[in-house]
Length: 196
Image (cartoon, rainbow, N blue to C red):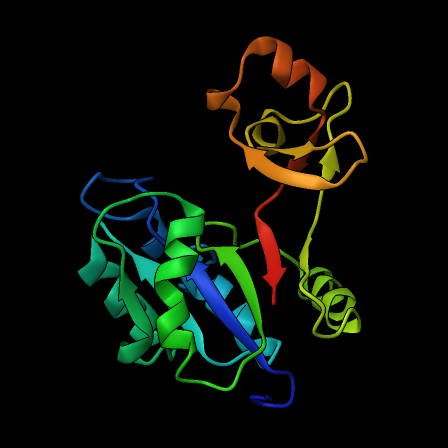
């Protein structure tokens, strides 16, 4: 099955509670550039540049703000999903699956709405690497090894858990881990995935 030539749907995770200027205004609708482009708009634009369609946006809090913002950048209202109760990334993606079933897509690119600084070529490389694997069940993602002097922001990303053979078995948030586990698990996932 193919859609727009690549069979890839996009999901923008936009259910975070972060804010910059006011708790009543989602950080996702804050301007990112002098020309007024908003944070989530930059993420949606990245999907559009990659010719990914459909692009679904999932949100729970401040949904009217986010709904209006993504409509302004070309997201179809039927592709806006509400996550009634915040229960993590996996549950958010799962809620999108019935909607994606309406389209002819074999792969999902998932990005956070508050991560607007991904380079087009970086995400394109992740997507290309994933598509080379074909339709074998695959999860593709980036990983960063934490080294001395690594920015604090990077240390806050989910830690990639591996079994004794080095296979990925999960991602765990640092606040869910003991200090010993945090020291032992040195690779993080900067929140970009492709699934099939």
